[in-house]
Image 1 (tube, rainbow, N blue to C red):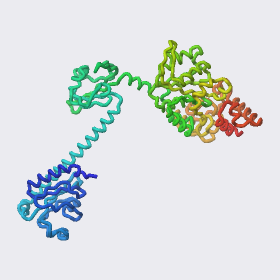
Image 2 (image 1 turned 120 degrees about the vertical axis):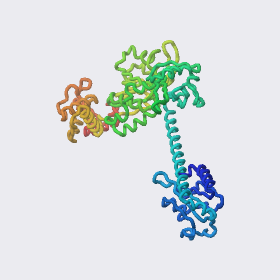
Image 3 (image 1 turned 60 degrees about the horizontal axis):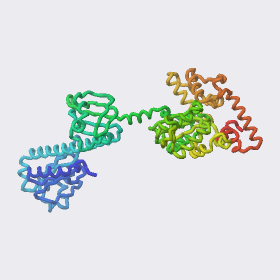
Image 4 (image 1 turned 90 degrees about the vertical axis):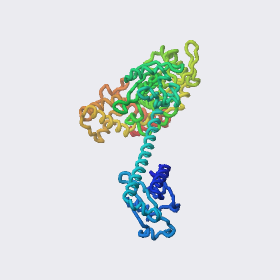
Length: 554
């Protein structure tokens, strides 16, 4: 690795020649590692290796001037194995400093006949040498700063080149100083434009430089190179001094603005990090890996609210996260309108090429629509009412709280569709409903959240309190549990009242549901059914059955 002076070796060599011409003697410039980085020999060529203990080393190590009028007076010289053959009679060396740091040394190697002329004006010679050392230090620092500045400019340009917006930087008259890759792609630009006036290339830009007003997202339409730019322009002045400034112009196409808007669609704020209080870490890891696959997916679990949240997190992690997202709640769409709503000329699929469609409760679709979706998934072809054929690229995520395998075997769900989507199925079974540790995490994070927004003192729950909530409320919908935590944060104590009508799903008390489930499982066990058979009869997975049997101590 080169030293600081080693980086300006050509300069040091030239500078040594200049000094040598002035003082008419041999000159050596060395760096802090005692490597020769510049030299000019008029009389000798012996000096090419500087060692510890030498006169040059003394200058660098001890950071002081060394002035010797007769080398025989110096013990280290007398002990040198080349003492007798060395033609040097005298020596003057000064350190090259930057602040308190020694960067190297400039040394005069003086033959006998030059000693008198140089040492008669010794103080002037030393002062001259010190000035030369200072000049070398300044040149080296300028080199370092210039190199650093070039690196910083290069880094800034690389950052600007990955920005999607088209960015142009000019002086106050329009002379191009910089343009990023997006600008060149949008306006068919070229690096050869740098140094030219943008107004001469695109006269439409003249208005920005004539008025020189700062603009913010002004909608514009520009004709250029037989093309048209539709979008917004932002113009800002960058002041270099009190009176001098440059101009940065940023262009955003309407297409890019629309794409950025898609990033704020409903559901895209749901991430796997946000889901941590509701499902286990193992399930998050498994599901996030599942999200990377650009395939149609089936999500099943006992709570469709949670299934939907996972689907949104999958979308947000997928490669399609910047494309359109549409949620279809089958229960809210009239049967007569479902077909045209999804497949019509102005339907969802036709108008969301590249996007993702999340369908909630697909088992509630009629068979005709189920079969039609299966056919579209298989062929990618969409035929509208006027027999037009289009091929929109759409990915589906289906969310169901039913056992679709059981429904399919019973003839209540399309085999064609089930076989299309069951290849990539993930079961949301390790959640707040059946995993105490996940339930505990949700309770604590929820209480912290509500205590914070209401500026309430933190509610310190004991383990027995969370156990009570787990036994009493674990089967409640997430929305009800959340309200329960909000009330607990407001009251500063656990909510221990008996469950009211809010704790009812579909009009049935959940305590009764739990008792019926325990009784039903016990009956099936007594009749000798296997866990696989029991899970099929109850319409749940074997994993869910195992967890419930463990929870109920069956």
